[in-house]
Amino acid sequence: MTIEAPVVVDARGMRCPWPALRLARAMRAEPQVLLIADDPKAEREVAALAAEQGWALAADPGAAGPGRWIVTR
Image (tube, rainbow, N blue to C red; front, side):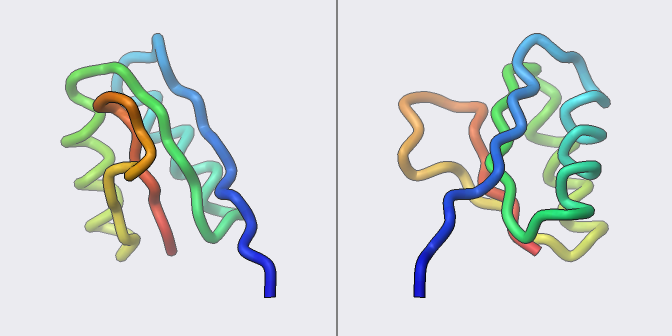
């Protein structure tokens, strides 16, 4: 069994709600997405979207700084 890397959604430079919208689009087709966003509001928006959709949200353990989350269906 192989473990595939998650699809990356790079939303740096985008202001909310765009990071959450890009995440929602990617999650339509993918079971797991790595979201990168630098808007300070993104964490709150993404957490609300994940909770609403029943997705698991976790900080990227390999990240050098904040603003990276792994979202899983």
